[in-house]
Image 1 (cartoon, rainbow, N blue to C red):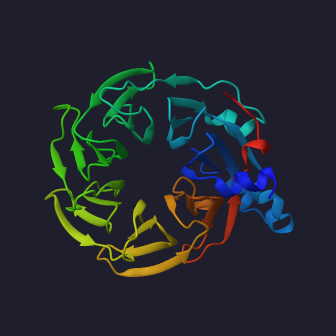
Image 2 (image 1 turned 90 degrees about the vertical axis):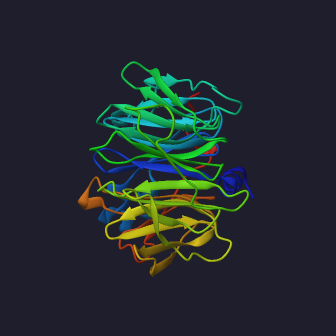
Length: 337
């Protein structure tokens, strides 16, 4: 194998995020790269005539170590890495062939023992607050206007894998961690959880993903055991999704009337909210880390999955994989340290 082939073989694409217009998709990976694809070009007629059009992308080194998480904040793209959080301008990422310095660099504090890696990001637009789920067991809150740390929330006993905001009408946010806990926070009242759930009771259980539907009433979470759904008003578990035995789940979303989960199984599972399997769609990844639907553009609405492959699985009709986008290796891209 040549260098480029080896780089692609060993790549892990941890996260993804769509641009404000929905015309572009950004990914981040184990090499610290940020790669921006044109979804509009990939779905165009010209991509059928010339397949290379699909994989046309801007790729650059965004972080010195692995880049774990992405979040769009208005006209900005925020990336979380093993050392810091960096803020980029979406216009520059989509209209230029070169990337200059990030707009801002945020340095997470190490409040407790652990690494400052930012495993997950979420943005509360109502309160203009960015949340980062970090390896020191804390969720940190940031003011992106000033670049200053607003608060640190330390309810987990081990590193935090994921974070999401409840909905646009609530200031609450939710985090999941290596300690097996899902913590619900209300920053308007305290810096400790207002409620803590333990969906998986066994020793060594962990939470790898959390997501909330548009109403803010329902939450799905997954990790070392079968993913499940909760009614947040009563904090009661309503559904356990019967994934294959031994499968871990690291990505879960609400997609229309269904729930979609991915993890250590080479399939994208579509479920009814009652736990019935609608479809198991083959993907490029033997272990997937993220799943997303492009809800920012009806014209370019696709479902995408990333994981332990340089390929990003793309579904136009969610019942099957239409094509793949390929993240280039470090030897094939621009550099920005």
